[in-house]
Length: 176
Image (cartoon, rainbow, N blue to C red):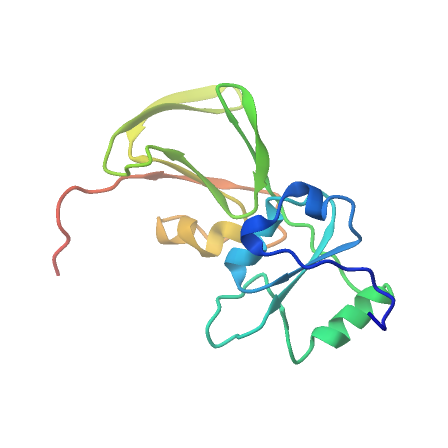
């Protein structure tokens, strides 16, 4: 309170768009899951992720720690920071726009991954019908996670491209 900064703390599971909309800065406290969940709620708001325990939390996005938080916050207040604008994906189902933008990836398929999904992929004026477990569409920020493990390529973080990977879940047990 002595800093003069007006702030409000919201638990991750209770956060909604109206909590972040129009704020100068949204700070997340936790690992990447907390950052990604909150990123779904922001539009143009500036975000700073703080990882309270780097030994326990994955933190590709949460780049501040309790050791350097005050320094990084001070730089933001003074306007001495660099903004990384990350590509996000807009999704539509049957031409109806979904209300959130994805920072990492979108999976289109059955909630039960061993079920077959039938879908059409259209890129520009080319389209193709597919049958598989589903399709994973990833951003550059998501290219180090699920998309990569499904066979995608790691993209430069500031790339303006996205990629998709057809996902096939085998019903056969994997043996070594």
